[in-house]
Length: 442
Image (cartoon, rainbow, N blue to C red; front, side, top):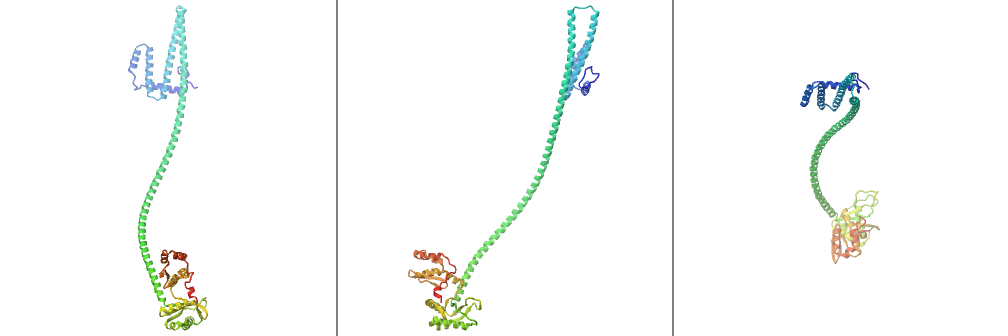
């Protein structure tokens, strides 16, 4: 431990500590503006008026009062240092008093040596009192030193703790500062993201507004297109009806034009065949099968030809012969005679005779085939009339039907006939039956 010489003759704590005490002592002796209590001033004046010893004690109390007032205006460390200064001053005062007492003892000893001896009873208490005072001074000095060391250790420990706390506070502050900087960065980044998000939302809103306007325009156009489609559908239905009506009219007209025609199927043909040869072939067929109609047929024939007009040697079957009469009755007579005979031939080979009708009319006639056969087996006397109507005798009356639906409605009121025609009415057959195969085959 370092010591400082010339300091009342007792060892101190450290050099810097004593230096600090001297500085505080010098600072305490400066004139200050700290107000002193009036009672302290009166006591000091009263003690100054008394003995020098009382004046010294009053000065000490005044210094202690000023120091106490000063410590109330300083930090805790300064207060501790000032308390140490007070203890040092008190120790110095005690040392001075001890020196005066020592001198008094020496004078008393010399006086005792020169004066007559007193009784032991009177001298013994004084001696004991001086010993007690000496021991007390020594104890006060030792305790003060211990107190100084203890307070210095406490002060050192307190300063160390304060330094550690300051470092910890600094670390925490730096950590908090870094956290605050990080949060500020995050906040700034979030603010930038929010700005970008706001811009994106604004762009999306503008895009949605544009989309909404486009959707409105598209809806208006769609409504217009729907109106146009409805109009087109309506016009299409009208056109379909008109087309069906025109087709039906055309079919009727075509059937009407072809009504006087007679179609001969399976008649052999030869090379370089002309109209006269075909006409001679027809006369031979009528003479061979219907000799009683030969004269009438020759007089009523208007035109005869093969169809198609172009001849092809690659054709597997001979071309059909179309004969047109002036009157429909001649054709009907020939067909009736063919049905009655059942077999028509040309030079001994079978041929067929049928009416020349359109493809649609022929298909409609073929669809009556199954029903026609069933009615014929049950002796209902069925007949297919022009252009494609089925007629038969029922309950003593001849009934005629233009299509199957009318026939279905009719048989619902006649259970026996409905049971008879149940399969034929509800089973569709596509071009698998020739209605007059039993009547027109030759």
